[in-house]
Length: 382
Image 1 (tube, rainbow, N blue to C red):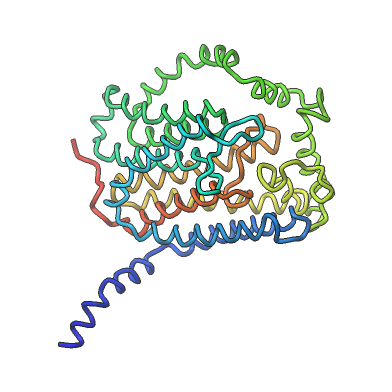
Image 2 (image 1 turned 90 degrees about the vertical axis):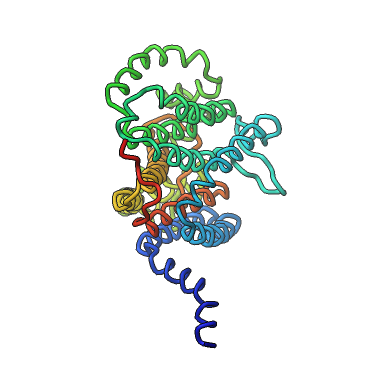
């Protein structure tokens, strides 16, 4: 009898241990390896010191890791109940940024809460993925053929996109829009509707330049002709290309990159951290980091495929695509393929908001894996 009572008291702990055992620890290992890469790069960015970048980043990762595992334990029903409150909270923060946000580098993107600078647009990306997943899993494939059913979720996407554009933060707004479009496609949006919506794009592209801010126009001009202002607007991208090129095949060696260590490379701890990696570790080091990023994206896609319920599939896909677009925009930016947009490289670049929200997103992804056999969230048959 005493043994039975002890067993009943220990049952909740045994359930938690059982869920911990079900976590995809190989995927967690990839995340930790990427964060370790960021720590090494930030240590170099500070000239061989843990301050002011590497040590705070490690602390944030530790907090994010605990949060990630905690979120992974949550059942899918709880995630669905979180969707609307989290989305509403993120929208309120975005509105707060417009009225009392912190201005930095020509944009108003941060709000100070309790002495900590928070970037609400990071949370908005994850909140949107969660909300769209909880919305679309209730709609059958046949119902997705009705364009009227897509109007409200489209508004849900446009609200954060427009608010982020207002800051202004074009890079993050594009990522939010692309992530939202990915979930629409995965949920069953028809190709004929996509083609129909694509018709006005050329006309929209002609109008957009009239609504761009001066600094955004300057970025586009710098992207097209960086040599016109090598010491001003074109300085960042020119130095980035020089650093990447000087790395060669094997790099100049850890802590020996001339552009980074001599402070010619701008924003080397945030937006241009990959450039520093390429300079010190060369083509081989850069490709290795890109393969690691790709493995994390593909691992998330595999979790989506293995999920037996529609909610889990959409959520895992959305988180994976958010991470993919995040990485793609940053890498294309530092290589000069697109205009500089102020988008960091997740888990590698220095930053608190990005680190914690990305780890929260990975927690959602791992929750889908842990509860992949759950019948909750299955798509209706009609």
